[in-house]
Image (tube, rainbow, N blue to C red; front, side, top):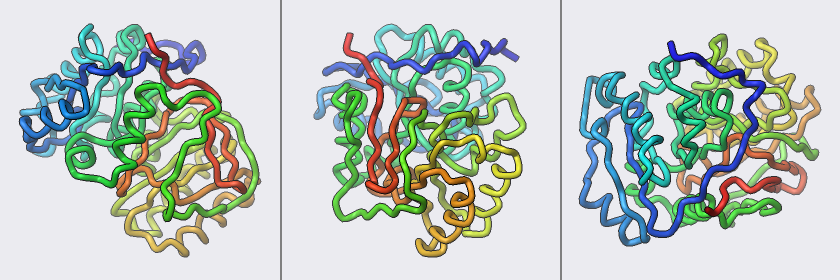
Length: 316
């Protein structure tokens, strides 16, 4: 097991912005997927960027994209590669948690750069926040989202966030025609952190569980019926996690009927007297908006606004 830094010494700091003509690494820390490399390279080139595809992307070991060693080596190599400006994950699936106790978080901290993904990648967002102390990005995967022809806000949100166009004071835009719902009104300030609800719950009781004190929790999920969402949230409540929160931003809970979900959310969070806003299009959905994990934000559930309170990247 790699020694872990003291999380109390880990301030959440911006990372270098993705420059124009920058180099983006592609790694596969979770499941495998066939990548059309010509399509991927051409897609990025058309937008002014280049790709470096790491070896594990082409591996397959059952439900994993290569062995744990290969996937871990790619993660470390992408962060330490001085030519790489940002790192995007190929897909989710499963496999990221298997790496956590072997990740060199000090190495990642010393080579901080934008790191992007969601779903199973949530495990790394939580761990990097806690033990490396820099902002990461809950955003599109290469295969399913950027190459999957998601609606335009997916791409624009991704590049605007990583290039530094979203600064302190920016109101994060939400697509017109995609209504947000105030579950509990109010205003909260805190660090935005979270991701896939199943993964958040799976890390409870481990050194990589969410440090919820002062956090605005973001949650999303897929293929989980309402009773399982109830079970996952109840798990967090009984573990004492929900009582530490300052607010909640609910993303897409794919496959769950909206009215029933909103009723459950009200039951869970109204007694806590914290603001809750639901319907944010981030996660297993189309469009899939990019969110900065670990960044200071203001959540105004009544006005249905999410505002950055810090720069999440800095221009070199």
